[in-house]
Image 1 (cartoon, rainbow, N blue to C red):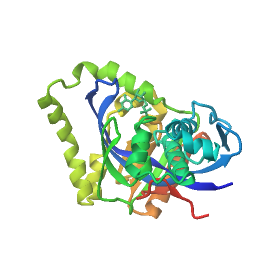
Image 2: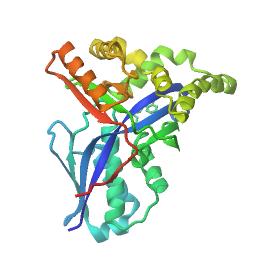
Image 3: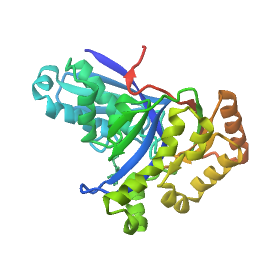
Image 4: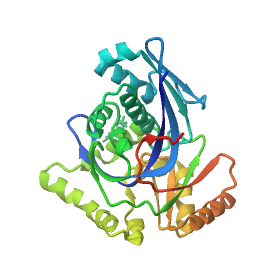
Length: 313
Ligand code: C5P
């Protein structure tokens, strides 16, 4: 029985701007997405019987249809019924390292790995762009997780343009183990609070979008200081007032003079960028001693240029 072992990296948002409403009920976004080395491992194999089976080493992760990886396998079966009939069902093993409800696209990256793995296992020969179109049906972050690196994401987050890579930087991640934030809740609350002020005319929309120019220039020039100053996330305006502990992480990081600090996605992870591994380790050690809470998890990892890829072994 053939099996494929894939690395499914997490992402952080260096920039997340909500432009306004879309006719499909989602928000029009401008984001800068960045892959990081923190990753899950996803093993995809055929099974002798029909259907999908998901196993996970973390019992808190649902293994039914609510799991995006499960839905990704079902999508491939629907799209390629003859190949499905030939190869049989799909078994998926998730080895989780990326925390959940964290704003790090862990679930999306797992789904991206399932799409890539099934494409290989079934010899479909799909292009990245075809896999990304399939992924976009399941979640806005999945197309990015397939290609990875540093990218400008617009539309719902599924329209991608690659940016100059920033893989020399390190990042410290901080998240409370029992503090997930729901992405639909964050966007819904943002709309309730700020929806009245969403731009209506093309001119207003374009004026708002222009805000992203500064971070894009900073990235093009690899100007780390400017990148740090231009980090931005509109969802902080709803998540930080609601979750005091996330605000506290943000404040504590800011005191330690990183290149920059920001919440990722809809949270609850807060990250700090550092120029070297030793600076990142120092920030982690200080955070650990300043916040002696056993529920606080901290990681030091590196920015990466890789999306989903095959594991070496
Ligand atoms: O696409 P995804 O399933 O990741 O989105 C999760 C939720 O986040 C959506 O159901 C929607 O409420 C919100 N969202 C949004 N606008 C986007 C992306 C997500 O409102 N561009």
